[in-house]
Length: 195
Image (cartoon, rainbow, N blue to C red):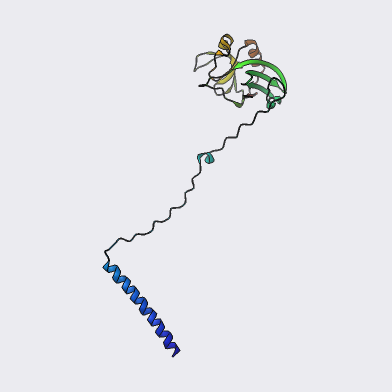
């Protein structure tokens, strides 16, 4: 008897399920036909990285540490061979192993053609150079960054700080720059800073 009761309960459940399915099918037939809408598939997550993160981050410029004294010489110029160029004091200093060998007045590029700051190396020297872009003489040119060089400027000698260069470091004393030119070697470091 217990088995029949269980069997009867199962039959009733199936019958009720069948009625529900039948009712649902009948209701679907009675309703106007609508296209089945399927939920859109979730797109894979796109990770957006900022441009700065994809490129190599530029190292932050090191703060220039100065050696005590009135000349404002950068500490890093005290080891090795350096053309140490301070835009604030307007000086070019040739220093070898911490010993100042020559110093001269300098002027720099204007607002449209600024002189680059940073650490460079002298990669070319040209005693009687003439600018191919500006068609001006650049005697005793010591190139350190693209077309920028330390060189003598007759305009600087004549006009002083009333003018500016096209990005180069101009020197006004021809004898000093000629002497520096004779001593500087290809590969000597150049530091241009403003402190």
